[in-house]
Length: 390
Image (tube, rainbow, N blue to C red; front, side):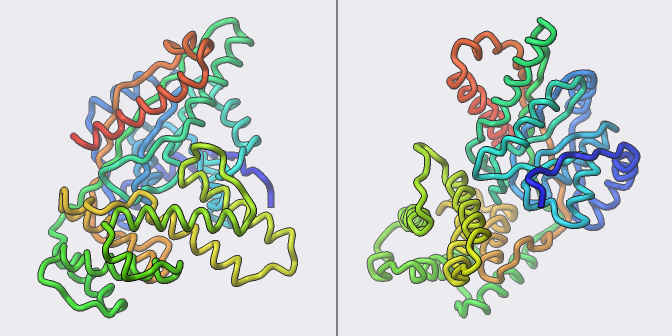
């Protein structure tokens, strides 16, 4: 298998897919795009510019939403996507519509180098999901990884060396938010009932109580799997239990593989490093212990699935979307389903935050590279969150 899958953008295939994308979006993905004309006009005015699009990543279908946006504009986008997606016919299709791979959990030099080269080209429109993976939460944004902004400045530096001029490069925070189109009470009830039956949990009085009972059973199962005292756990607040689990499971996996996380690494970065190390060790060892391999792999799936979860997410705003965000996570764990089917017809709203021309920060970047990248990355994340909050 190659170390890197480059894009092989086919303009005719992209245009054909764009023409049928609204039908496929509504029919297969149960998804309709809602975007303000003013936002489309702002993007059209940048048609001849280098553009870096930075959306949040609440679901597995976000790239479909962004592709629908490209169809509205009648222009192709490039997409940075996880290496694991580039297998078989799906991988070839993704390459043909402009996607290319990145290996998460290590410095993927080939992908980084290609991204810098791509951003040096005029009229490039590149989509990077800067959270680094799905949050599975419709209303909150995880920390942005700094690589996108860093690579953009590297591309600008190279252009400046070649031409003597600092180019424009526009970073655009994009907020994606989903809303179900119909009444979801029956879907919520049916989803809860399936989980209750599977876990042998009695039905409580209200949907929220039912959700907590199911989640409590799953949480207790995690704690039992990793050897925590159930009596002591019951006395702890849920958020403390969740954080303790994440910390202990991460530490256990890293010890098993003999790796040390870099200082200040996020959970997601540490998990990707664990997965990469696990695969490397398994490929190098013909006598791999399958039970050990599967236990660590399962632990990483759980960590990513519940990375952004916290007690109170549904209670503070009990919308159908928040209920189903949480239930989808529980279904993935209980039924071992990677991508549960959409629960109903949805609108996906796309709203642009304030567009930033990175050229205006280039001098600051040259003087204080690390600080400038960190500050701009956090500013872009906050802009995405602000529009979600609105």
